[in-house]
Length: 403
Image (cartoon, rainbow, N blue to C red; front, side, top):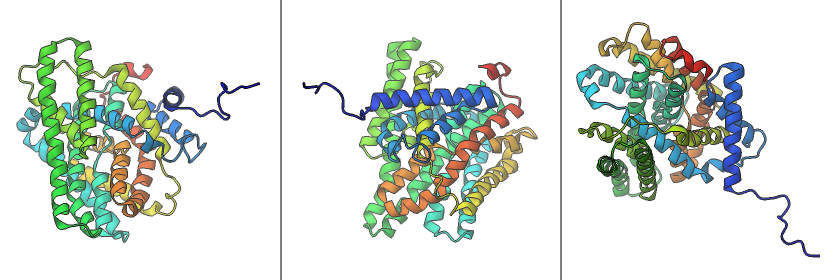
């Protein structure tokens, strides 16, 4: 008797089953840590990913993050767009010292991490690349913790502004290091010179064109929240797809799109940004997959360097905010909380390492040993630090604690 209609054993589950399993695991993990420990749900999403990943159960293969790269890019795209949309150029014009403080926060952080890694004997190019990636605060963590707490106030707004600036500058710094990576790997000088210009110029151009399209179409469809939501997601997805197809930077493209869409909206045709429940699906997937990709095996071998990386990163951000905070209007006592809120590293850093490793596998392996080990620590502790800072600043909505 033929039973060819039966599935093979063990059954092979496709992407829809994987997507559902990741969502369910993330939901359960997030709710458990929120209700039992009072921690951010993000921490639960990450821990669920760690449990599913190759470090623990092995249900997710080591290459799961790479295979689901389209989901990662879409998730980061939505988050980075919102971050860029919060970057108000008029605010920076009115408060020049605020922009100086944001630039100093990135520069001091880069310099402190670079000096720390050089002191541990790392090659200058490796140390500079790790410092560039370490400059960026995780946009996903700070945005989602702020949303979860319904936080509003001076520390929250500056946290989001500084994150937008340091993410953009981190990608610029990483791109400007490409010529040295090209030359070190015996590539031609003209490729070394033109590649960074292509990435930065092309990404900004795609973001500019997408912002004009978004504003024109938003004016055409009218101020209907349902229509504008579909339009917004469509343009973000198109921009992500264009950036990936053209080998450009998704982050630079989406920050440009968000920033220009806000600051070119003279007629105020865009409604307030709300990604709603649909966006949350992608965010849960992002953190579960990032948790599954964390590498703990290299941590013991580079533990001292990772501690130096994390401490130097905190000190660099803190010194800049303390030095320029009062001039930019930060209240006394808020500078330390703002520095603490800016500590998270997450999926963005992982993607930056993966992109570098894709071009230079051997260099990417050395880079990942330090940076991904630091991410493994700050992926867990970072959301907790941000939640503590916003609550201590008195900017969290008390009603959000039971949400």
